[in-house]
Image 1 (tube, protein in one colour):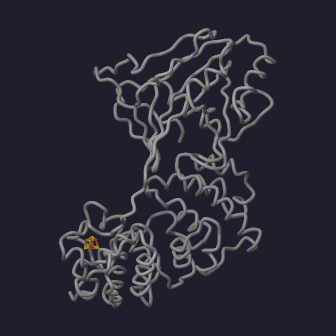
Image 2 (cartoon, protein in one colour; image 1 turned 135 degrees about the horizontal axis):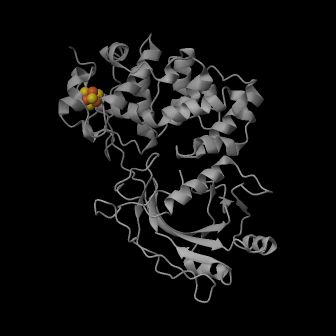
Image 3 (cartoon, protein in one colour; image 1 turned 45 degrees about the vertical axis):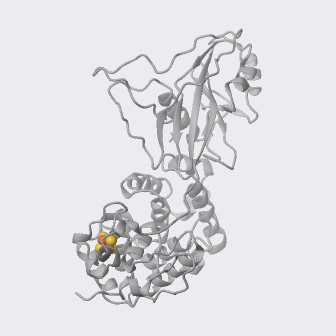
Length: 440
Ligand code: SF4
């Protein structure tokens, strides 16, 4: 089979390196698109629920959910979302808390907020119909160039290139593109290559084929070049080092932080606070947060009831190791309601609400989920479930060192403090390795 492109050493020599002046040759469209389309039709994925439709609402929903998230994770969310919000008008009319509650566990919650805003814009400014061109779609909240192109290609047959993470990997390898994608000029150059490779016909199968190749064969760490349909023309396969592509030098700078979370309990109630609109889990409900045990101690001094320090754990986010020190305070069941209201009102800067099982307030489903998750998180890890895998993408929790500060503070009414690690062992005799994550 004839290689589709010029030899990479000639086409891309020095490209992307400091001082390089040579501009790479644009790849000539050749067998690549035909091979991708033929492979997709026989070996690609055809049974995913969002492939059985040209409804832009459904395709858009799937594309947003699939950003940074694997297909297997998305499937259940996609079905539930469509049951609750069968069309863009239903989604636009829903309270944001309901949208976030259904999104709970998928992570990257800005996607859910943008999804909601986008639905409202489509209804308010486009009469409930998605625009038919990628350039217009890309103007909508949360829809980037690649997502817009995918929607336009799948729903309206527009001949336009996509360039998500998987496709970048396939294309940089195929053409031997070693430009640093951390630089906008190189990213633009790759877009040009992607456009030059587009087929004249069959854009839907081609687009899906690129996605399928990246997801099933051209994997980041162990690409299956031997059975890849474009292997004969692939520069990276010829070099024997496909893993070196794509080149991206800018690494995410990770940080770390610690907080104390307060789990207030009275009878069957738990109290939550809505997080600020910026930052981690923006706008979601979580347990009230304090900068330190001392800060919590200052607030909780003199409270009736009993406090307990629960196992600390580290929640690993994409950009952050977040160590949380949960502290549970249980008020006596017979404490007077006015006293309780005063205590709760003074406990945090933002208003606290309980989880809706009493009268008076009705937080959204996210709150109840957070409490359920918190209750699981802060229980000692279940026996015999060592190495529990976290649900959701990119997030996992691990046990952390206990907080150095004592709590409850000396002199407060409550005094019970649990140690860590918990003494409980599983039946196999192994200590549990992980704490459950606190919030989906
Ligand atoms: S031959 Fe290998 S490196 Fe090249 S596109 Fe196929 S799987 Fe990726």
